[in-house]
Image (cartoon, rainbow, N blue to C red; front, top):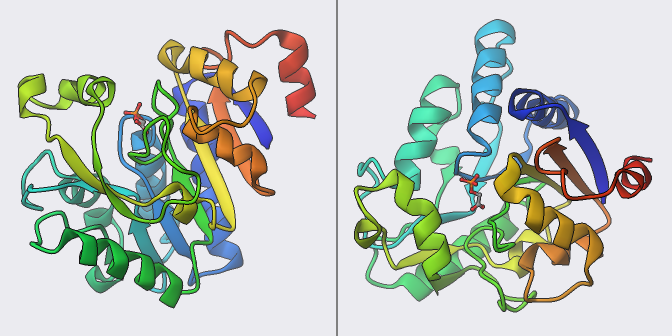
Amino acid sequence: MKLLKANNYHEMSKKAAEVILNQLKEKPNSVLGLATGGTVLGTYECLVEDYKKNHTSYQHVQTFNLDEYTGMSRTDSHSYHYYMNENFFKHIDIPTDHIHIPNGLGKDLIGECQNYEDKITEYGGIDLQLLGIGQNGHIGFNEPGTSFDIKTHVVTLTESTRKANARYFESISSVPTQAITMGIGTIRKSKHILLLASGKEKALILQQLFNDVIDEIVPASVLKMHSNVTIIADEEALSLLDDEKVKVLLT
Ligand code: PGA
């Protein structure tokens, strides 16, 4: 895993946007795996800024989002469809039929998971997958204990994830109990993975990630088995790692 250190959230976001823009320069028809949440918001802001300034085109890009709540309309302001549209897609020139987000509304959710997986394969797999990390080490909505091989699936959210996401809802009881998520087996097939972490809340899980063994109890630890992972973390997120360890990781 390659580590890039950022001074703060803004610098982390700028560096992440640079990685994505370099990917698009190298391959204008890239397949991007995208994430939602607070950590990646600044990255989308930087990409939108770049689009306004440099007109980087997304005409030939395909995007696949990690996850979506079940039973929620895509126009609901809590849905990830809404988040992606408001924070990124409506500001750039991506054709709407190039945007792929799991449909958590259908009757056949298992079929939807299989279709989603097939579609990713059909487009040649994900070139660059953007990821945040949960305080419990989850990636996408793959909670601790999830098999490293699982593909896109329906998941029951843990109490800790619902609690963490309650800040976006009126109360924890309004947070959905289920979601569709790309599986760890889906994520780890991506050619390059870019994981971002910012703030003190992520310090403990980053310490665990860098120090502990590979174990399904820490879903993100699967990334240690991948040959092309970039982690961009800010000082606060790295604050529980000793300086020597960070130095080694940065080399
Ligand atoms: P956050 O979520 O960016 O809002 O902290 C990350 C995650 O849960 O994957």
